[in-house]
Amino acid sequence: MGERLLLVGMMGSGKSTVARLAADRLGWAWIDTDEMVVRATGSSVADLFSHHGEARFREEEAAAIASALEGDEAMVVSVGGGAVLDPANRDRLKAGGTVVWLRARPETLVERVGDGAGRPLLAGDSRQAREETLRTLERARRSLYAEVATEIVDVDGLDAGTVADRLVDAVGFDAPGREARR
Image (tube, rainbow, N blue to C red; front, side):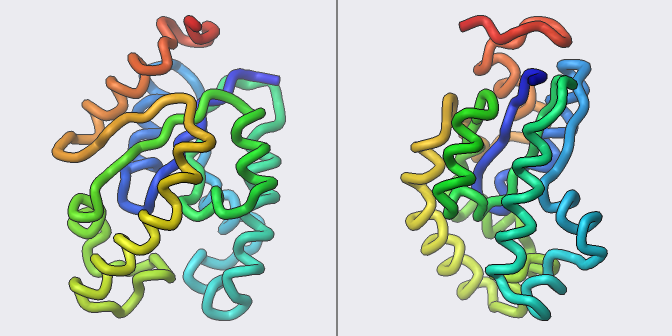
């Protein structure tokens, strides 16, 4: 199996953007599990939630994670924020590569998610309601992110390029396609 750098964290932590930047720095491919679900189903994440429910989305997400961990190509994978809720996904992630938790305070997350458009767990909520939802989700998921994480990169107050640099430094990948220094 090819080397995998797996990014976990809350919605708004920058996983998708940082995955692209880190992949560029490493000379690796990148993939986003939410985008994989959209391609596989032909529906947006929001539509899957509203028409088929969260359980159906989570099934598709688990299949996307399993698929993302296959193959021989070195890859950075942005993993959906709630994927860690499934114990089987946590096991896959821990066995599948180097897992980095992009950790952010709820205040940072609420700024980054804006009005919550396209985010089914936040859609239509007021700013105050979005912040409370994010706080609740972060409290519920914090220990799960910590369980799977090999490394933690705090993202508060940092731009995506700086986060990508810190991420690559934290995991010790020193050149494109080379194994981590551990």
